[in-house]
Length: 159
Image 1 (tube, helix red, strand yellow):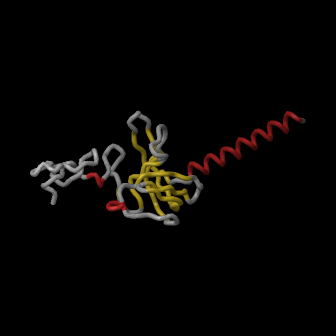
Image 2 (cartoon, rainbow, N blue to C red):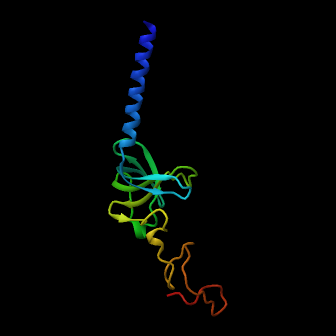
C-alpha cells in the first residue's frame, strides 16, 4: 500500500512541477530564434511588462505574466527615449545567459515601437554606420579629424 501511495505522490509531484515549468516558458511569446556567437540557438521572445527600476541606460522590468525580472540596456535617451518606474512596455529580445555585464540578463532588439538593434549580430541603431565626420563609430567616439590649431589641447574644428 505504501508503495502505491509513494508512486502516486511522485506522479502528482512530477505533473505539478511540469505545469510550473511550462507556465514559466509560456509566459513570454516566442517570436523567433537566432544563433549566438557560441553556436547555441536561442529564442527571441516578446514580453509585456512593467518597468520596476531605471538606472542610466539600464531598465529593470517584470514580465507581466510570470513575474520574472529582467535587466536590459536601452541605449542613450536621445535615441531610445526615457523610461520611468511604472511604465508599461512591450519588449522583444532574448534572455542573456552566461557572463552578465552590469547585471544585464536580457538583450532587447525592440522596446514598444522603437527598434534598438536590427539583430543580435549588429551594433545598436543609435551607434550610426561609422561613415562620415559626425557619425559615431563602434567605439563610441565621433569620427572626424581632431584639429588643435592653436595648441591649447581643445579641438578647433568642432561645429
